Amino acid sequence: MVVRDEVRKMKLVAPQVAALSNEARCAALAKIAEKLVEKQDEIFAENKKDLAAAAENGVADAIVKRLKFDEGKLRDVVAGINQLICLEDPIGKVTLDREMDEGLRLTRITCPIGVIGVIFEARPDALVQISSLCIRSGNCPVLKGGKETTYTNRILFGIIYDAVKEAGFPDGCMLQVEQHNEIDELLTCDGLVDLLIPRGSNAFVRYIMDNTHIPVMGHADGVCHIYVDKAADIDKAISIIIDAKTQYTAACNAVETLLIQRDEVLKTNFIPRLITALAENGIKLRGTKEVTDLVDAYYEREAAESKNDSEDGSLNYESVDESEFKEYLALIVSAKFVDDVDEAIDHINLHGSHHTDAIITEDAETAERFMQLVDSAGVYQNCSTRFADGFRYGFGAEVGISTSKIHARGPVGLEGLVTYKYKIVGHGQIVADYASGKSQFHFKDL
Image (cartoon, rainbow, N blue to C red):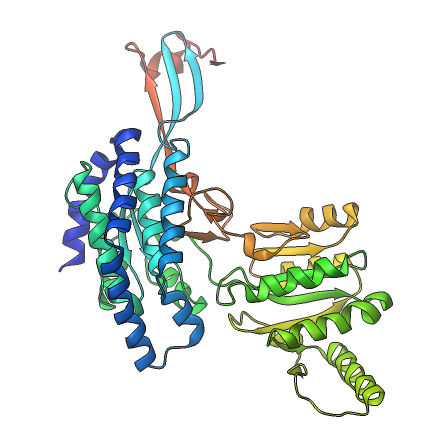
């Protein structure tokens, strides 16, 4: 397959897809949900091939978890499709309606972006979510999934493509590429592909950004923070931190760094609870020396009181410089102390990835300052960073999370997949009359 030739055909098909009615697009989604349930046994059988290959090739456990497509994943993607069907149509919204002069009317109307290339990690449920969002928003997707899910992606794409064609979509409205070298070919399709959305490692996203002239939307990494303020409810803090680290460790919205206010009450009451919780959940701590000194002191007291120096069940920890803090996507968390919320804000804005960051506090004023000044796509108070997700936001699903400040930011759902065009309807007006003063603009919003 020559990717450029197929994408050129898709570029001509894209306006036909954009013109499909809301009813037609919803009917296509309903057909997809029906077919996925109907063919679930075939999907699960293909997924087992991918899982077997992963086991044979020694793929990391965190990635294997992403590869699995079972009854639970099927239930989730079908729920996402049904949620998308219920959402308001993103196309054809009038966002500006203005009379420029008598008989000269300007409107701004939302419309699909067009041809969207999405290169995503080894998650078969991502293929369903991305396809569904593109169909609902009237876009034509070019899909490249991870090689680890080759069999699952192939059957899912076939089911979805057949379903939309049955629902009246034109041939060539979707395209799947499978070979790694086809990514480089796709990157050269500027003028044919309107937007690229890469999902993967920092290095991979940077590679995409540096090797194409096509606009790229997304984020390179997810260094998410939780700041524990001196006014934090400790029970909440522990529960939130453990959820944010363990609920889906390999996700880009999992917490990677803890910032803890330098407060004696927190050192006395929170740190011991944190040490125990991290140890119980198999989480390794990479802390600054100030943090690990407290851990050392905690275990020295424990040993003295129990007269037992066994390390069974104790926390795995090491002292590191904060310059070594990074995105782990594993059961590892960094930690450092800060003087106050302002130092936490500065640390996040300088060293974070502008993805999702949270504060744990019962002080409304401190929380408001944090949420106002932290420059991230998502800022939370007293809840897990794992809420940064299109489905949890009620978007139905997401094509990815953007840390950009242009066009779309945060979880990118339907609204992030539409742009707009301006329409003017006149009655023979010409600019020369306005330039000469013969006619004048009389702007009035309708």
